[in-house]
Image (cartoon, rainbow, N blue to C red):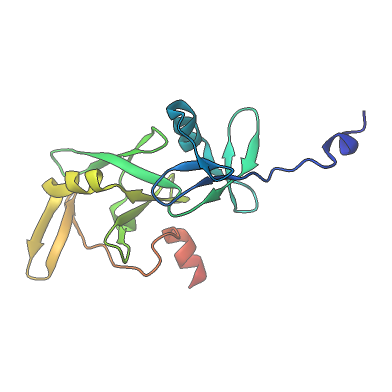
Length: 168
């Protein structure tokens, strides 16, 4: 069989979409199967062309993502002020405090996956940061591992730090 003929008419485009609050949809209908939604959260990647896709060990397909590709579901705060993020893809990683930023809606964002993706803190995760919030003469900051971090407010908090720096 000719491989080109086999692929003719096939596409990696889908009607799978995730809204900015994390709800998955297919053909405009919300997906209600928890295990499928959890799997989709774990499969979010970027294709070679920069578009978002779902990618697993078998296949990949383009999707539409509104908002940040990942969510910070919860955080762990160590005694030294270092923060561990628990992400929507079920992974854990240390917070890179220098990537924190506020969106115009007051939500907190940071870079994850080695600075290649953005995560938005869910409200619960933001409240868990209470242990590292402090105030001085210059205002409120987060005391993260001995550093004082004052997240800037950005009109568009979705691009990663790397993406914003490359645009400058």
